[in-house]
Length: 263
Image (tube, rainbow, N blue to C red; front, side, top):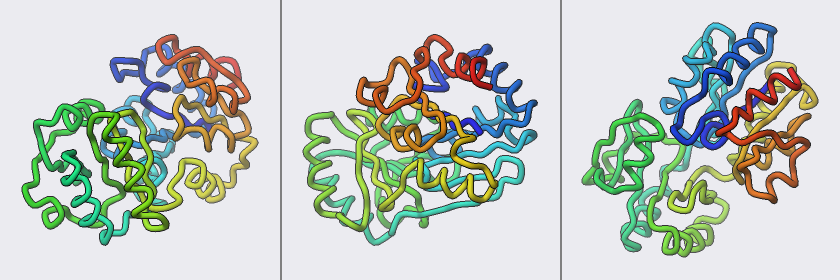
């Protein structure tokens, strides 16, 4: 199995997978390697890349919401799901609005946001190739269950809000930043390695048979968990220090290099 983060790992700065990387992964799939796309993105925001890699034919998996939901690409069936407690959404919303920031979640193939025109909301829409709908009454318009909320804002004030949210929802919800302007609000214990552990148990694969590639702090746990943990050259130094191997950057086909070298 090879587990791949998307942004900053599988895709380049244009959020695209290069022909070389795609060809290398397709060859690996033909040899029986299971490909897992593991991202903080919603499921729909991963499906285009899953289609490019023909995961439906080869039996790959989409590990979305940073591990909150795993979908079998061959059948479309959700094999693992841990939604956010709906009771945390109203008080979270109140904190976000009081701080002058915006928040969003995902409803089928759309992003539901408190403000459609916000530049950070539009950036999330660009990353996932999903349209945005504005909810005037966010808390009551959202259709539950949901797997996460994303709070967006300028980095400095968002960091302050992060500290307050972590303290206010301790034990009920985890919050961490996936980018300076993105605060991920997810069920407690949601983590790529925890979900990956569930998946390999189901498939009868040992952790020694897993390669995991990533570039961010939300990838650290799976890099440490995998038999071969790979950090991208564009990853922070402390993430690279946790890896067994450092490959080229996401602009230099780093994932293709790993596939060609190890698979």
